[in-house]
Image (cartoon, rainbow, N blue to C red; front, top):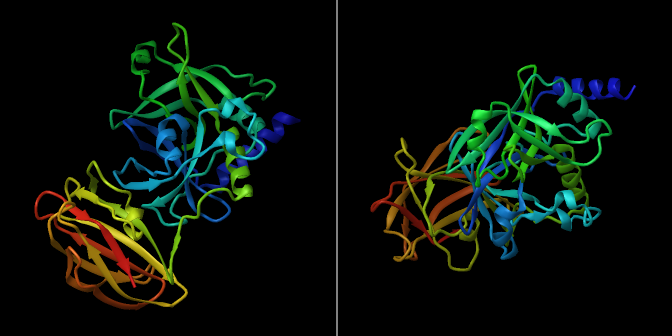
Length: 369
């Protein structure tokens, strides 16, 4: 009977669609890099990332955000991350020692993350893992995405207990590809040409069999749902007085050192530095503006001399989902410039295109009034 119920749950989820592979590259700060899973909340359509805690522990404990890049090269920011062991009800769950969850703050609109956190129960995973024709491991190493076929060695599947699985490459020749730096890689189930997240790699296993430990995704899903219930995460949009603003699209190559894009909307000094992505002609940013006043009057783009050379931005605007219309061809990006007139009803999106005059664009503050 339990097996039948597992197949029913799996079939319903597959029929619903919207389950796409969203492995992303994580730049956790302090030299830590790895992988994570980008997904959307079913409750409010906000975007989140599940990832190993050790990748972002230092940055998150100091209140910093981290950057991520998807497989299409689009970048974003998330965090500070929440350690799963701090979520109410999971304080004593040692399986979650190295799990973190972080809300996306830059680079994605709410509703833009179609992937989910896989199947809802351990029973459903028992049936899916038993019946999957193959398991694919997607991970990042030295800023590149890789894939290899893996198989499961153990995991207490008969009783559906525990959350840690032991897995290894199906082809012994791939064993040398398992090395330090693959943290957060995602094991995917293949079923009817769909990808379901099965487990997240947390650590290489001790021993000679070239295996790794992975946390099953129903455990990750349970932790996230508890986090949402507790409402302990930071809101994705900060109130900037009467206006609210958020960077929802970023097309650039961020340079180090660089502030978070969100810091540009604060009153404190910042410096976000970026170059043009290969194949593009300009650094491009999209800002979504909303607020209780109902209108945005102007935008000021401040760039201090020690952050970047003065330039101009081409500014376009639109109502969300509409067509872009030109607002200005010469909005100054300079030290303490005059604001560019916008005068549009909210909500409204602004697209900035900046051609670097000296190799990179530097922004110190974005003021919306």
